[in-house]
Amino acid sequence: MKTSFADLWRPQGTIDRGPYALIGIFGFALKHNLDRVVASYAFHRPWDLFNYWVPVRDVVRITSLGGDEARFLATMVAMALPFIWVGVTLTIKRLRSAGLSPQLALLFFVPFLNLLFFLILCLVPASHAPDRPGTRREPALVRALPEGALGSAAVSLMVTVPVGVGLAILGSQVLANYGWGLFVALPFAMGFTAALLYGARQPRTLKASVGVACLSVSLVGAGLLAVAVEGLVCLIMAAPIALPLAAFGGLCAHRVQQRRWLRGETPAFFALVLLIVPGTQWIEHVTPRPAPLFMVRSSIDIHASPEEVWRQVVAFSEIPAPTEWMFRAGIAYPIRAEIAGRGPGAERHCVFSTGAFVEPIQVWDEPHLLKFSVTSNPPPMEEWTPYRHIEPPHLHGFLESEGGQFLLTRLPDGGTRLEGTTWYHHGLWPSQYWRLWSDAIIHRIHMRVLTHIRAEAERQGE
Image 1: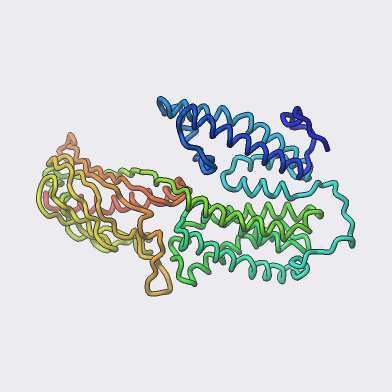
Image 2: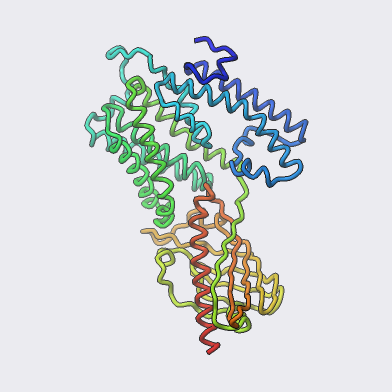
């Protein structure tokens, strides 16, 4: 089918996989070189392929930027708009040609997963392709699968789970990435490939496909626990993001298997989906992003004067053993605080269950403000594992405190409002998802300390 220039801008009609791939490659080459010329000569900035992995939040915050930063970002966004229009238009045409829902064009905007999406669209034949039973032999991979539901599920898991464990070890242990490749691309790929193999011989129900997809990811987690790569607590934290992505992968595979003309492409789909995982991990490895800085603030009211509270803030006695489930499961918790010296330059040690934070004092405004930096961080947790001890890379350098402070405010009734603040960063992605966990943990740490200080200050003030 001949495609004219005007057809690039109209969503009506269809386009086959060959022209779609050629136009996509040519369009990307044109856009990249145009972006490079404008960035280099108009803004004197370097530009390469990895600049396209820019977080969406950088575009959203354009109004808060100033000067050259805002002009540069606005220019690059404006230049991208016509290419985005053409890309979405052609993607809708390609989906229609393949007999898939045009609503799947929303995947065009999903980072990393859109690469897999484009590859699949370049592979899927048109839905009107003739289906001649007996003229095309099934691939060997498909013929090797049992027709029964239980047997095909077992073989699917026997293939995908070891591959998933290997890719997880590659990302976490070899490339030391705890990001999009490990927590997004891998669960989706495992769910997709497990359900794809499960339904390669016979159509399966959506519920069964999603069940096999989620089971594959669950078994990958169990495998990482068994080979002493990860602990149980971290796997539990990852489950709320991994299982929905696996289920979505199973849903996508189920839709593929509903098209008879796609079943013969199972090995190609299998290979392409799995290749996207190490590809994403490698991109993250060669283009590391600075870890964002976050802040957690907690407060408590104390029936004691700021002077009495100050003495407990500077150095507090040993806190009783924790009862909270997260601390008993291995999350590091504070035990006591010690200080050497007085005033700015003094060194405070906040002793945790995994070691001590070293906190040089920056501001000593007695009895109002104690502010400190952090020069040494202990591990954030002790992994719960059937082995005596494991040291996954995320225990070192991925969640670290940058500093903190205690602010004491005198209340009208003579009491004190004590506010604790921690500034920290973590190198786990998607950062906003992992921030939900880290903020909650740090808040519980704050409250453990603040509650103990309140008890001691009120007891000594009686």
